[in-house]
Image 1 (cartoon, protein in one colour):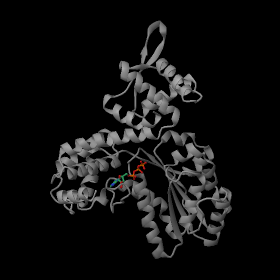
Image 2 (tube, protein in one colour):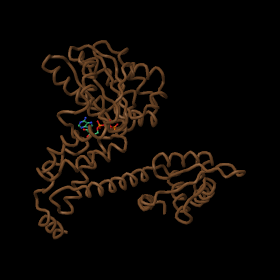
Image 3 (cartoon, helix red, strand yellow):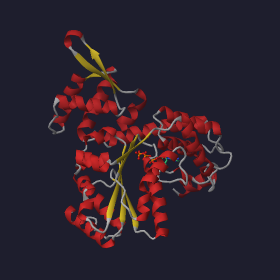
Image 4 (tube, helix red, strand yellow):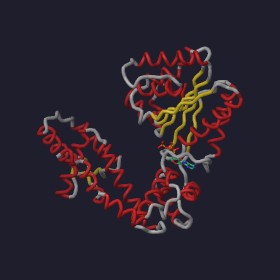
Length: 393
Ligand SMILES: Nc1ncnc2c1ncn2[C@@H]1O[C@H](COP(=O)(O)OP(=O)(O)OP(=O)(O)O)[C@@H](O)[C@H]1O
């Protein structure tokens, strides 16, 4: 093992030929400036600035597609205002919770309370008790708590909107302190489905973030690349190639940054001194493979079973119909000792797998025999799907 490491160090050196500071390309890095979000920053700041004087503004709901800078802008503006309020002597604190990662109601409310300074055990209390302690602590403190709840659509789908309902009404229980909520979501439909009272209170102010175009992504990448790469290790042409690929796939800055980072890592692995367009192409394939693997690994059991049967049939005869998939799925589920889902549910699962880009389901009319779906799997992702389904046997 140590020879392998020695050999690698000898080959690549301890100083990277490609990266000067790779942290700058990590997803949680927050840059000092956020180009092309000046309007959104100004609007949010203008709305929130009253908190620096201790006045509670209305709650805000931010939505827009993934990687459009929602989290970065919200955290940036709140951080700046908290810094400002310290010099003005206003009592202001903030909390940030990604409710996709911090997943249960207990953990979300405990995390908010902890960021106010409370000690909350990781388990063992009732949710209502944690909530009560949070309210008491707020009351004793007498300030403004700005709470950013990120990816709330994931949370609400899993846990319902009880906690949001409580939080949007929390100010009715408080006299000396106030809470301001900033909710963030990728899913516009989710907003439509919220309890109307939660929606009207959380979305007192709504902001929509548009996707970036190729030119905007270029500026964002260029700004990061200047800090991240050794001078001369990446050209403007390669950066604009990354921007063009990411813009084609709905203008997601996270995806564009990932592409740049992974391209740099591939160049480094190949012991190159410069990142090329070819490295970006390879990075794009590597990221897609990783995405497929991750998506499949996290599917619930029955979705995995359905996907497995689709794969088997497609491998044998090129495509599968809904009926064939259902029969094969029922047999497999019974064989493994599970109660099979209904045909309707399996059809829904097939549509979901299609939406996730794991299968291609095309409706075909078979004349008197009615319509069915012709399901295929893109050959370049088959191997990854199979790999991720290995635990099914
Ligand atoms: N205008 C910008 N300038 C510089 N970096 C940006 C900009 N917009 C986004 N980014 C970067 O892109 C990445 C994704 O941004 P962010 O997390 O804010 O997106 P998001 O809209 O919240 O996405 P999601 O909904 O998937 O969380 C982050 O690394 C962020 O720093």
